[in-house]
Image (cartoon, rainbow, N blue to C red; front, side):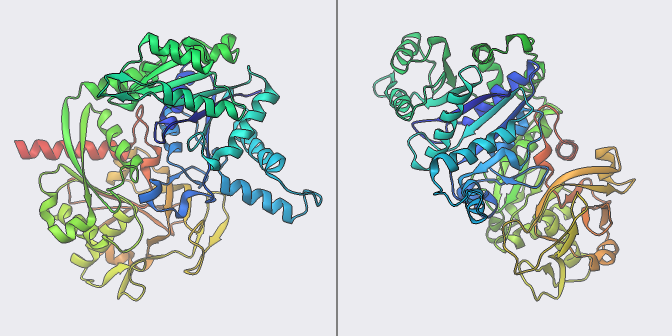
Length: 546
């Protein structure tokens, strides 16, 4: 039977439950256990696919095309397991399932209630996502005390009661604030948070205490006394300068040992091999070079909107001991302040986005990088901007545009794709009137790379698979026009119907892809496109200084 670790948070939001849970999972994996992770989100949206990046942050996409919370990105960057739509559950999805069952008569005419029907649905979702693994880490979104998360908390309380304390444990992340005026850490918020948990029948087994200052032994003892948690299980969780230090930090405090003992897994584990994480931290702390990359996007005011992009760029640097400094620019800044905002950078990345705001700034950015021989990496909307740029300025088609912005443009180089074949071989269709949610090309799909191209050199193979999330794509009617303008189509879908990558051969490094390679980048292994891009940025910097 899969052992379950439930992770909750208290006092305030954004304490880092996802990072803490992922770090523990990484240690358990390093000890030889097969670990999976899942997120329970209390909002009523079925998934975050139609939510604003300014409010929710990045939408992370899994292999099977699920649009999920960005915490799943943290999970996949820390553990080797590839997650699926089973690993991201929202209140909206739970209620949707329950109501569908009720409409079909599966409750035999009974009154449908939160207990047991909603909680049973939650429990079934947890069992389905974690079945077959040694350990399942389950993070409950929100903060203890929120009315929205109560059904999830009740469900995990029931699981603990049903499975017993050696099959399911509770880890609670809380805040121990430092009051500078008093020069003291305050434990009362943690005490109240645990009190709130206990009032609904959950006694935490482990406390992770976030604080700016090291937690003194006296405070640990006090917290243990007032929360009924063993003193050794009150773990100090200090702020770290890089999140990749956290597995090492938690291991040093014996968190994995406590968990293994509580779950009676002593005979199933070996010593923790954290050498890869030490290598990552060493590369972070001892760089041999530094580059500045401009990220010209639409949602840069919200730090989480391009979370995977930022991390993937840093991973590309880690592979070659290079510190990557990010210059975040709104694409509208390029339109209003001019191209001068792009001066002094070693590479330019234009990420994805939706809508007309700032698109012209992305087109201008592509043109600037192309004309000034600055390494350019376009992702999704960034690829579409590059195509529009080339057609307008090299292809003699000043009316080139995307129909997402102008349905009646003279040359719709980027258009709504109405039909495509999924990875499973099924034909999916959509129209301009389709619902926004679930009508994009989503998930892991293979493409064939043209031999002799930059993309082929970077990947080192002809067949690759990347994750997608987009509604508009390259219009095949403009293939000849693009190639006559000097742009090379370097990758296509296996059926040859969809353009996946383009590049400029007479440029030091100019590559754009329709997919989102940032979703497959990890700190330990990086990603070939991001590693190649950072290498090109280093070369550009070197050329300028020589």
